[in-house]
Amino acid sequence: MRYLDEYRDPALARALLEELRATATRPWSLMEVCGGQTHTIVRQGIDELLPAGIRMIHGPGCPVCVTPLETLDRAMAIAARPDTVLASFGDMLRVPGSHTDLLALKARGADVRVVYSPMDAVKLAQTCPDRHVVFLAVGFETTAPANAMAVLRAAALDLSNFSLLVSHVLVPPAMTAILDAPDCQVQGFLAAGHVCAVMGFSAYEPIAARYRVPIVVTGFEPLDLLEGILLAVRQLESGRHGVENQYARAVRRTGNTAAQDAVRAVFRVTDRTWRGIGPIRASGLTLADEYAAFDAVRRFDIAAVRAEEHPDCVAGEILTGARIPTDCAAYGTRCTPRTPLGAPMVSSEGTCAAYYNAGRTTVAGRAA
Image 1 (cartoon, rainbow, N blue to C red):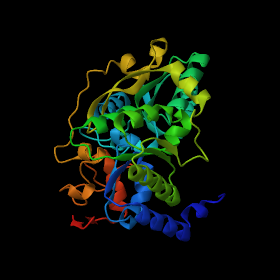
Image 2 (cartoon, rainbow, N blue to C red):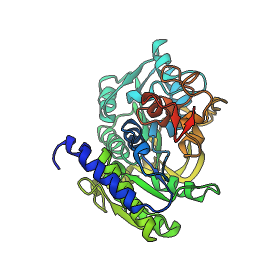
Image 3 (cartoon, rainbow, N blue to C red):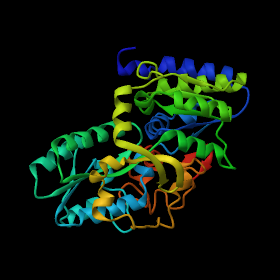
């Protein structure tokens, strides 16, 4: 396959669905970890086409959604200073903090700038020596290498006016936290292909063995997802539990070792709080001590910032798959992409946004 259309071929999709129907003899519940996969599943109606009993649970794989509320409030505290520039990817600007968001703060005069790469923020620090430039460094393992390279570049340039506000999270600890939950219904995972393209998938092998669950590294197009679901169901039906790589065109077991080296050089594993979920041990990255000069939390003394979620937002239960967006009383009424109460309604990878943009008011026979 060479062209995008080939990963959306209707005849091949029907064949995979027929094979799934022939394979599945009992109900199974699978979780796709990545928010990009969630959007494809919902937009293409894949979950509605699956055989009866095969249920997709939408996981916490939206990096914008799991960025802690405290991080957003810290970013806004930095942006409100007259001597700083807060640089960020655009999808973070409308994520609600405790009282407002970065876009509203920008409208009121704060110097908040959208960049396409953390290296853009480094260049900004070079061209604005009288301002301190802070890059809002969020995301899973996918974005960590670029942020690590930005720190290494800033160190090489001896930039004293550049720092990161770091809120990186790691996928494997989140998966184990989900599996350890007493009410866990997940029987298999579709792992995020882009994360595994960077980190490989060897870290998933102990999880599959310990919890006896299949994990299938999966891409993002409809045929990728259908094949990933089929591979997971085959394992479940045969009583197997291992890691399979559906996304072989982009992922190798060892991943991108150069990217991993950069991450290991700049960051250290730490406990991390996930928005709406809470603390997960050893589930995040923080700057290593030798790069403490680039840590915005230390530089601006904002570690004490605390925040509380909107009482009507059930983002935590959405992100762990315990509930779906149409279970939320605010969904589609008080909470929309224009007036979001929580991050899952804002991000292009958020589950609530996926449902809303697909016009979902009924799921699996239940009315909203």
